[in-house]
Amino acid sequence: MTGTPAPATGIQVQDLSVRYGARVALQGVSMDIEPRRITALIGPSGCGKSTFLRCINRMNDTIPGASAEGSVRIDGADVYAPGTDVVKLRMKVGMVFQRPNPFPQSIFDNVAFGPRVLGTHRGGSLARVVEHSLRAADLWEEVKDSLRQDALSLSLGQQQRLCIARAVAVAPEVILMDEPCSALDPIATLRVEELMRGLTEKYTIIIVTHNMQQAARVSDRTGFFWLNEDKAGILAEYGATEQIFTSPRDRRTEDYITGRFG
Amino acid sequence: MPREKFEHDLHRLQDEVLELGAMAERAITESVQVLKERDVARARAIMEADKHINEKRYAIENETLTLIATQQPMAGDLRTLAAILEIASELERMADYAKGIANIAVMIAAEPLVKPLVDVPRMAAKACDMLHRSLEAFIRQDVEAARAIPKEDTEVDRLYEQIYRELVTYIMADPRAIEQANKLTWVAHNLERVADRVGNICERIVFSITGHGEELDTPPALPAN
Image (cartoon, rainbow over all chains, first blue to last red; front, side, top):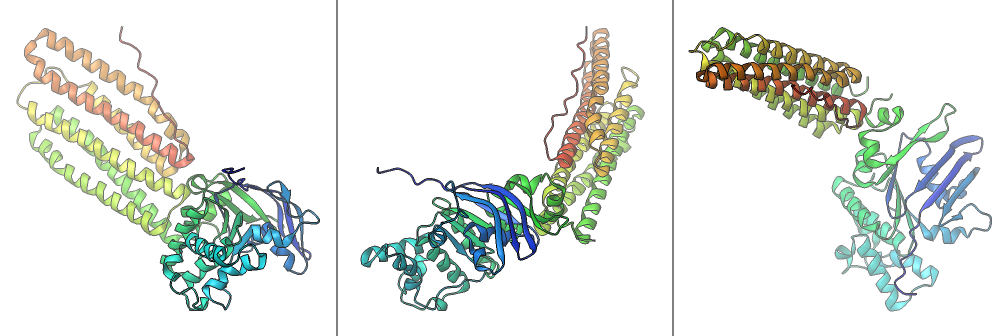
């Protein structure tokens, strides 16, 4: 069956609640994340945005005392269903963090790590996967002649693009980004934003950002997180980015994005 | 208060718009006065003063663009600033109409008026009143007032029809009146356009408050026969 396009991976979150021990970090969040689009999550610190993000690839499991209720369906399958292969999930749903975290290895080995572990590529095809991933991350031209160089010798902006290449190398469907540009200077930030647009050709992207202008620049849809009366994180408003930033429906959204609250 | 500087700048900008509105109103009222009083010197002064109105319009534009560039306004703030840009432009055009009326005052100063000016000052007063209240509605963020004001345009249109019809009868009675009558029709037309532009301003105000564009059409004037 040649020429069949890969199914576009949308994510349906239904009534998701997360506790850390007794504390309710997230309460009843429901959201439909559109495939091959950029969805931004904004809101003050502590409103559950990163918690939400970490549910999509069950990174929250690694936090002691964390528990989740509700469902997160990717391609129709609930990632919280018993028997879910979490390792496979985390390859399908890659993550890029706030501080770039390349392995203390060569640039090549960083990107090749995932495919090597998976055993999916060897030799020539491995080199091709590495090149393809570095191109997708807009880093190939800068490092193609120094692939054996230590990854930590790259600038922060380059390191972050290397982390993106690393995520891309295992053929994910979703890429989660938790404030991917906060450690980067404005020019490096704009380069990452540019490359995000290109990534949507193949991947669904969710980005948590404190930078509202960034959310407004790059995303197609924006979710605004807030705290309810019980100090649990909730989704206050979710909609098309242009609508959120020009005519938000919820007063709390308007107050937040115009900087009027507090 | 969060964003104190921005709030302060926004209020100052709104004051500037009110000031520009007052300048436009004065120009319209005085241009009709000098037409009536055949005062050439004052008419020329009004035309000369139009450049101050243009300068003020550009000052408001620059300040608005600066706020947009430096304060990253969103949502209601962004719509308000966009409305200010449009309103300043409309006010400047209204002042241009006043300048046109003053120019006509100079052109016909030497001749006796073919008819006493009664309805023209009425049109001017009505249009200026609508303008004044529309700007108040902007400052007060009063969406109902902004929706209601354009409906009053019917009255202005009716006065225009009246003036036009009267002038036609004067032309028919004495064809030599045709030049002046044409110019007086033009004066009435300018005032009718002022009222139309108040309608545009009201549409902008409604948009800036609600985030939705609404056509505030005036009900069509009743046909003449």
